[in-house]
Structure formats: structure tokens, C-alpha cells
Image (cartoon, rainbow, N blue to C red; front, side, top):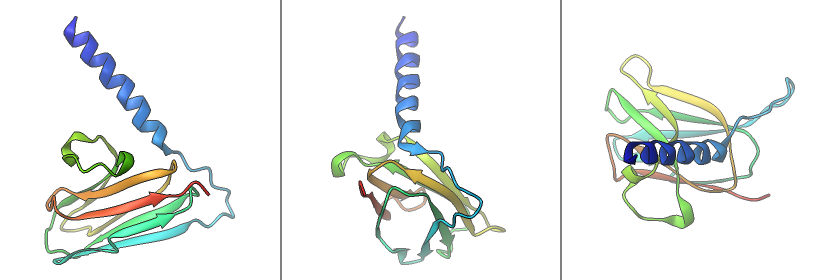
Length: 132
């Protein structure tokens, strides 16, 4: 019974998380904005981004010296400062020794998000999606 309850809670949470990251509906002539985050050995730049709820290309370029890394976009409800491992990732971008950049066109719902780094838990990029 307990495992069924746990599975049901996980399924419900996954549905809620999926709704926060909408599938972009791009016209063939539409050109979304591009936001590039460059990661050096000193950390990410920029460290905060504000964008409208329109689709945009999120690109991460890894120049940190860490050959393989994962960059996860997580929802940050009301600016919470709890351990990021408690949040479910909405999107994972990866870099490897042969491919130092990754990108994805996304359209997050209005709210606060964070891009967190697997190799450096102290590096965070705050992303605010405005209502208009």
C-alpha cells in the first residue's frame, strides 16, 4: 500500500512539474530570443536572467574546465533556499569533453527558476519568467 501511495505521489508531482515547462509552439517564421550562459572556472555568467513567457533558446557553453557536467533547470517556488536536490529537474542540459555546449528551446510558465550545476552546487543562475 505504501509503495502504491509513493508511486501515485511521484506521478502526480511529475505531472505538475511537466506543466511548468510548456512545449513551445513556434511558427516557421518565428525567431525566438537566445540566452547564452557561459560557464568559466569562476562560475556562470550571467548569474540572473529575466525573460517574458515567450519561447527562447537556452544555451549553456561550458568553459569551466570540467569536461562532463549536467546543468538542470529547476523550479524555485517563491525564492526558496532549500537544498536543490529536493527539487525535480524540468530540463537537463549536458556537456562532454567532445561537446562543450548544449541548448534547448523552452517556454517556462511565469515564475522563478534556477539553473543548477552538478559539479558546483554553489553555482546558480536565477531565471525569472515574468507574467507579461
